[in-house]
Length: 638
Image 1 (cartoon, rainbow, N blue to C red):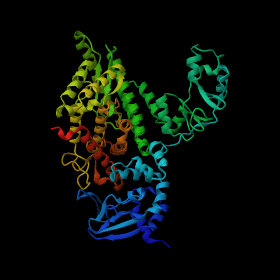
Image 2 (cartoon, helix red, strand yellow):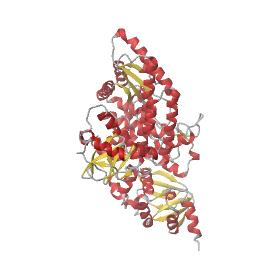
Image 3 (cartoon, rainbow, N blue to C red):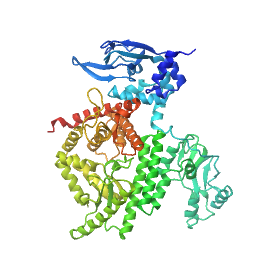
Image 4 (cartoon, helix red, strand yellow):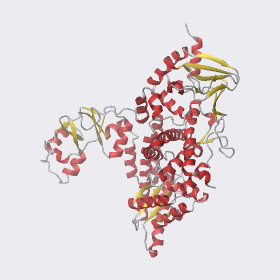
């Protein structure tokens, strides 16, 4: 006989996170144990410092206000409405309630016993991930060692889900690969490869891979006469091999090949190069699994003859991004891959433009990406931001040299525009004479920005503090980066002004945690996720990194490094990093769905789960901005 009350509860629960992540049969068992409670307006549910109940709560109808007493004043922290959870964290932490809860109006609550939910946390990692993110709204340091020790008994499994690519498709590799000992001749190895119709052979010693010989080795080392066919296989093998464990995913394989520039990965029992070989994963294997492979796209880019071809390849990269997002592959991996593709496109646009001009650049130069591309966070087709620096020349050469590079930059930006990267509305492009200058001129420009930090100049200059070498001379880039950090070390007050401008940006939420939306214009009533949520985290990471003299541009990489250099603030920076990942993935998903930049979000069309996901990211923004105020004394800047 059906339990109709439990069925109704199940129907409600499955519409909200994290219950929508739980299989129906398991969710029904939870529903059977749910109790229903009615509270009149202003009735207390639990008080601050009370011992935790044996269950946590979900709002079925009505609303609940969460409040805290501090310095004899009552502060309303949040208003929970339909589908919101509260009162869970103290149960997991085994501590008293840090806040009180009272009915804000007539309210019906579902109470869920913690004893049956503990198993859910352990057995369903996605539930754990959701709770880790959502706890950011209830505590300053949701990722602290204190919390990690108690938060979940299965914390290692959760970390694995968060940091590895287990959501991605498993790579199918060739088992029992053909091998040979290092002592046989190259000719013997070639005969084995020919007989087995393979393009590579793994050189092993006691079943452990020590090297690999490919068709390329045969061509470049034997065919060119560098070695003889009678030489030992060990003399021409590529070593050491790149190894991975048997559960390698497509995502891991792709990023390994991008990083190490190899065509084959060796699969060993424990993933190290000291254990037994069990398989080989080749470029061909990956191509069969995923035809829209980033390495293939980069190869196509290098062979492209015009901007139209680059545009077609970039459209395939957009499909690749969409596939990664749908597979829930970690956003840091996605940014790395798409950034490599964007960089390759820009490089090819420069090469095609130089060929079009018909003569090589007269002096050494560097092409920089600034802004989101400079931070390697440009996942969608937004506008282009770039600059060019060339080496110092004699005065009589200056005009002709600059003329060449302006001509080059104009052709490059035209090609990037054809590809789909719109011209920068603020004209921050290398084709603008102001942003195509010699190294001394660039140094002087940064010096002026840093020594005289008036708001107008700061707003203009912020984008240039995220510059990344795309093409050209590495030494020019290093010289410029070092000079910028040197000027900032001498003028630390600049960071206070930078912080002040950053903190002038309105927060994401109003007093009662409602989203602050645009009040007028074509995006009226939409939420600007870039300006109100992503940018504050980007700005904070930049300021703290400049303070420590870190030559790092990527926001996630900045926060990870800051965790090392400021271990006392590790929890704060980790929560910021996690929030940034969620926001960037959310914006990318929105942009791909709506075929736009993903910047403006229609809050009313979001599911409850998505609204909660966004809200979970906002507390770290508030916390890191408080840290900026204290560290850089921004309140003293007029």
